[in-house]
Length: 325
Image 1 (cartoon, rainbow, N blue to C red):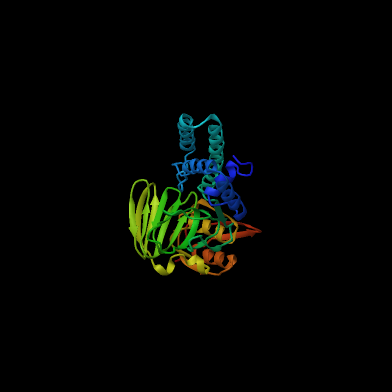
Image 2 (image 1 turned 90 degrees about the horizontal axis):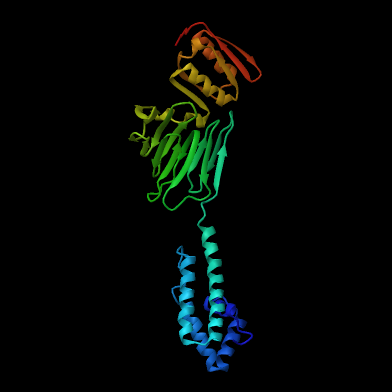
């Protein structure tokens, strides 16, 4: 082959990546000798063979087989010197295909995983890659991909969050939280899935499917699903109380005092010690932007308890469930 016309240059030419100057060199070379045009034609046939890459179907073994077959076939009709040139050009194609295959490999890697976390006493509002809004409650973590897939939008939640999901009928939004899975297309709802606590979903708008390993239910606005020991129970709830924590309100309805204390710990970033006799006391009420001493005074008046505050540690004592509600 002409010293200025290499196999790599021909590969660039056929891939339409050659510069104008390189194209001119090849065209001049073709005009100089009919043998050059014959060689060019043979290489072009090889380039246009099934070696050509198709998007997302790169197969190195297929490329190697096709190149080998082409070389063996050429040996029957051409001289050894031409076969040598043919082999060199095949190597150029393998290099080109290999680079493309590498690009395809990295372009198909799983998307980067991102994470948002709130400590006790913190809350966070942010937007997911699809435009959905998330309100993350205290002591919670959510993991999600940098870019959602073409089939669905999956996140993993530990803790509590309120979601305003952007509608997309082709890609369901899925929240994985422990042994519970929540699936929607576009709606607003609250998911609570703290460790060592019952998991629940409350729907403010739209429809939500909640599933466990045993069963699944569909919720509509004003309904709540609670998961306990694999079984899902449905309840009616007030929509005004759903995710009231977003607006700075702590709401309790027939909640054991042990549950109230756990929520207060996350809300105010404190440690609370509660005597065993008081854990089953039931409390109904709400606090909006109240400081902790105010909340403790309400509990004191309600249950006849006493409490001590020592920095971030609080001790609540009482002999019986003296409920004045």
